[in-house]
Image 1 (tube, one colour):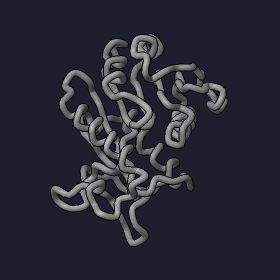
Image 2: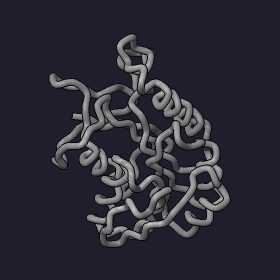
Image 3: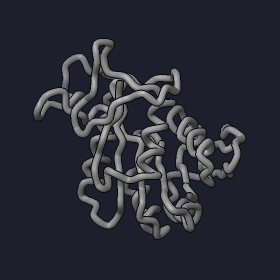
Length: 202
């Protein structure tokens, strides 16, 4: 497929980029600093500004799908949605956050007393974006939430998928960027969560 990846130089974005390249896709890798994007087969680095919807739409046009891996505190979800729509692309996949996942019925992770203050703004932005997507019916969107701990590590290919509940095991709640990328690209290639959020963890 031809994929436009916004935020291709970040922690999640760079691993998604590597996974897409590994599987033979053609990727337009969009970042503020394209010189930071890894030189990989099938990858075309491009400079882009997430706050310029018109220019971003021009970069997205002609792709089969758009993937977004930008921080919620460093972007405007409405502008991203406007750009995807203006580009005429239906399939839109977002690197989500864990804060909006439930730890118990009706209880979100972000609302727990031990949720780190440093991550609250980003988590709240993710929740807002998810709410906007849930009200969106003209795009085939998917929002993939990581587990609570989203870290660098191994690409094992062994993980679990869930829906709106935080996944955890005896070691806690975690997923590596490398394994998250596998689940993300699997969904792009074989959509099973259209207009839905899902999550990945060990």
